[in-house]
Length: 307
Length: 266
Image 1 (cartoon, each protein chain N blue to C red):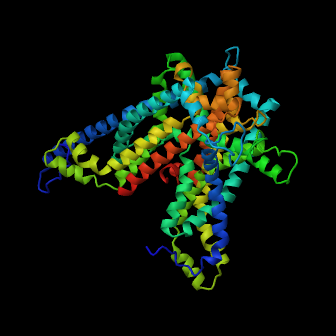
Image 2 (cartoon, each protein chain N blue to C red):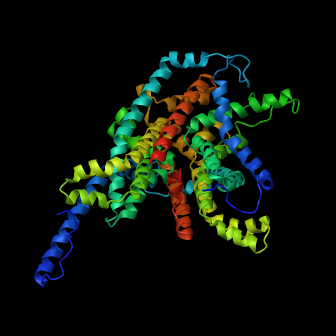
């Protein structure tokens, strides 16, 4: 009995009770079946994500002598090198998010205004980098930006500069590389939300005498803010935990949060300290995403389904 | 669809917008194009455009035993990940789509967790766990870790296919006597197969391009291509990587086109 039967109107009380019981048992069996379908996936996520993180959290509560202490967390406020890591991470995150907004908003706006066919062709240029390996793109920027890279040799050939500009192996290299990698994460949700803005609203505004600028500023822009917010949140959060680009393009000078975690665990084998860094990073990430969801009632993970 | 949004603003008035948007698109796509062109250069120096053309970097890629082994490992892992993640993700999406479970929200959050949790934390955690159970530097370990990374993408892709499918059709099939499996296989599956294929492609590329977790849990004989590339980039800039990168870009283009083709037919 898997297809839900409808109750005949004229069954007696006893019959109804019997039916209710049968239906309940059926619903229970159905739930169990669905759970069985979910269980392998849930088990894997549990084993690979939840258990290790819980374990690391447990480790972070003990100092190197094995005694319960908050030493691993106190370090963050006491040691200058940790404070510097946090400052660098947030600085990079703010700059990259800002750059993504400045570059991404006009692009998403243009895409939303183009005829459908042209927009879908342009979208390929946004989606393709999204699906190209982060390593490949970081390598490309290394080639372009380094001391003897393309930009420097062009500028020297043209006589604009005599000494190569320090573009890679420092903060600017990290920012440029990360902006390039994270830009699609802002453009895609923003574009999706701009497409849902009713053009009748804009037309009505213009009908009532608003110029193009006023229409954009007073109607379109406010309506695009939720999409922009979701892009900003996801880019910012991804910045905080970003590893590959800062590790390869920072030249060892730009130590961001994730690199610090890798160094603490791999180089110094200090699992407690590395785990504590990870726990705080996770808490900050979840707090930002939770805050966003609470404020706007939308899930920031939408970007992955808006491909 | 006439194509135009229909606002009384001419394309000419919008030229500045198109110019700006075009520049940003160029910023997005130029690095890949530059790498593809440079991979055919004859020089060890980074020159653009290259003075002379050759295939020497492709030769050095295909002839190097180390690069070839790493590529084989990556391909193996990606294929196995696809074959594990696709059925698991499809089953999970099917269950979530029914929406009758009380904890649907939590389940959804759990399954998409690997998109949210900083990947460095997953890498360190997985390494730590694998060290206890002896899965570091094994293919099995890599496949399991990559499956967790790929699952959310399969789930989201198949779920979006299921959302536009009327589940009552399966009910009808079952009321006509088809078993559960037969009803899914003969009625539901043919209608969502394009989403499943797209999901599988995304699973493949996710695994193939995965860097951070592989950095921690692969090594020795199971060094993945991305791990070897990462280490090579830390040392110096070897133009062989331009050839490898070009292959990866071509792979992305091919997989994405196939996914788009399937998506359109859907």
